[in-house]
Image 1 (cartoon, rainbow, N blue to C red):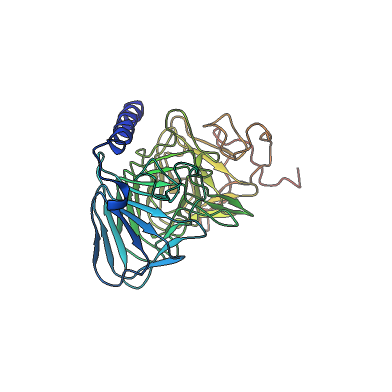
Image 2 (cartoon, helix red, strand yellow):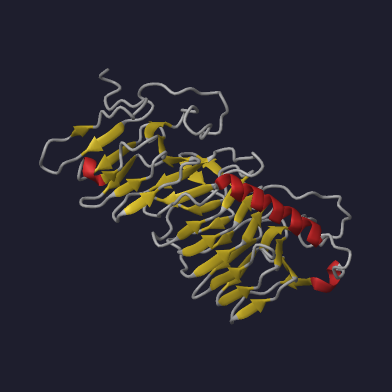
Length: 363
């Protein structure tokens, strides 16, 4: 099923590129609108226009509706789009007319809007990000997020900060940054403290430094894709933070889920359901605590499910982004703690657990 998806995406992408180069398209200058003031009342950005964001912190303080086929370009020098007050973005593209958020230097989408005749080339980190800033109700369908994540440290391109909630469906994230900053992981789509009602489905991530971070309570099914034309991401995984206090499902089996919290806890009476083939990788010293013991982790011993080290490239590839410069070893992570309230407790010793050690010093 995923193989068919890649073929269809490739055909759609090539068709879109050729369409954008059609000599019958109007001259770029007739379609360009430079945006210099915040959105303070309900606003529609119309199809087949190119909107240039040139203010450093462009604010959306009301509903901004973006029609299919619209291109939004961000000038360099830390240009950001931030949601404030009751603002939200409704961006519904289509497979043939996606909405594109991209670099001012990107001539492949919207033409040569910076007028330099192709002397500059778009690159990851050309512009800042779209920050949903605690807002709810934004929708992005059939959108492209390209060349974002500018910052002096690892930075996202679409940031669901401050507990934001959104729907992100059928979007493409490509040529963005993200990455690791100290002990923190930042995705091109960064949702590690987003509300658990956030929907992330049918998206494709490729050629980003780090594609996706999520809060642990966000359901992730097997509909997202983490490569295109065999090109993946440097840190090719789904990076997870926080605890689980509602019933949650993870079924993605193309890349690993990476547990980045020191201790991710599945609360009393709550469950985490894993699909067959799911791989959980753990950063150094991390632990998964199951407050109700084995019943907290549904399908814990399902077909193809493993719990292993972040350094384990044998299971779903190089997730820690260092090629072959590290190898897994015993005591890379702590383990899975079975907490049966007042009953017996201890660490799981399932056969599908690899490279852990709950007592590395003692051993």
